[in-house]
Amino acid sequence: APFDRLLSRRTLLGTAGAFAATTLAAPALAQAISDTTDPNSASSTEMEAAISNNIRHNISSFRALSWQNYFENTKKGAILVDLTSRALHFWNADQTIYKLYPCSVAATDDLSRRGRTEVVQKVVNPPWRPTPAMRIRFPDWPPFVAGGDPANPLGPRALYLGWQYYRIHGTQDTRKIGRRSSNGCVGLYNEQILELYGLAEVGTQVLMI
Image (cartoon, rainbow, N blue to C red; front, side):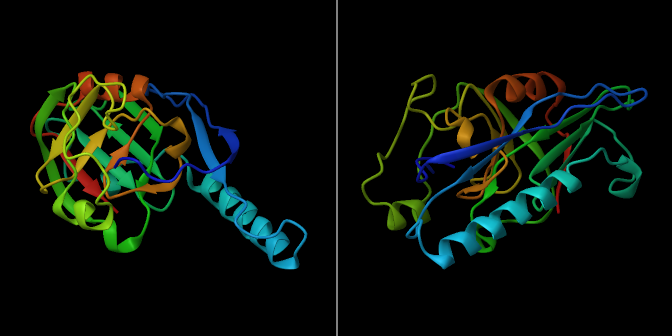
């Protein structure tokens, strides 16, 4: 989701690996750290330590998973979004392709949604409109950004889900990836949403946990 506050300092954590009978992406897992307190204070040191621990926990949970633990089958493909590790997993219908991508997820629990849905529409250069809730929280945001506009926060492709306003989409701000930074949508690097867009289809199962 768009126009979130950008944080100033990033630590890029790379995750790559090869798995038997799978095809894995090898993306960088972005983590951003913001200095919001006096850098000379003890509370700032404690905050940095807490962030460091969270990053280590996120790396340890960013791993390949088995579809059988989450789906009865992979008919039309399956997408699993792990909101805790900020990872998106994809299996194609015959399980010959497996992808693991870092992603951005909702900034707060109240913006998150968990459960099962599916891809209901695939859109090239999706237009963006803030939801009614966004308009209340951020009245200065524009009411519409056309698809293909460099300022469009949805990137070049979007998978629309069965839940209203929820998308899996690209992002022009790569600093969001690997973070709790969105208004509810799941964001991927633009090159990876292009790849996922080509693999997923209308009807692909989606589970957010």
